[in-house]
Image (cartoon, rainbow, N blue to C red; front, side, top):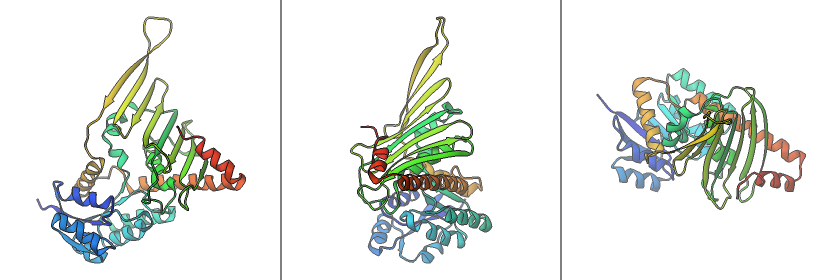
Length: 329
């Protein structure tokens, strides 16, 4: 069976790892890379013994599928060019910057008969994959995704940079239509919002309270799911989880049984790319479809709109206090 030919658009911090995995994944060969920087493209291409290009059209003439790992602001234009050329596309999260751009990409992929997958890699985190079966109809979800400040990703707000991971995860449990979004956020070290908190209420009764920060002293990647008969806590960094279950014993009151889990060290990105290649090869629906990416972006847009409304109603100091007030020490 002939291997699929893969290319990577944007081989910076994340794109270089797309190239690394394509170079060793079964069923696919890395055909080349493309980057606006000729030096950067040559560096990564030489590392894997492939061709380097600065012109996207040159790369597209040589490949069957493409990873778009350029900066977020370039996701739409690069993914659109790839789909227009009839190539299957995995675009890093978020799918685009605006909901209109996301809709255009989804519709274009359908018209061209191309597979469109979105790089929400936490879906492929081994601990998330292991714990998914333990989560059913959560009533309350609490998330903290915190990082120290770095220049990468600051071309967009922290909602699109970090919180969107958790927005996608929450939506993946099918909580139903969004009923209300309340949010606060402020810029701290960049021109865009660097810390944000959102409270999202769904028509099903589920409520998600999510905090994202890229100006924190400690790194944290946690989600907690509260259900009627159990509490599930997931740490995406350590890949550890805990399930606390209510157990009806012989006494007058139920007791709590605690079980801990540890997942393996497989790279989520490699699992994600393997799933993408499999979907292209078999024509199956991707694990994270273009529609899934669009839904996460639409919810992120509602969070950003709620932040703007909150900021208009309150002073900058009040908005800052509201955003930082939800961040754990």
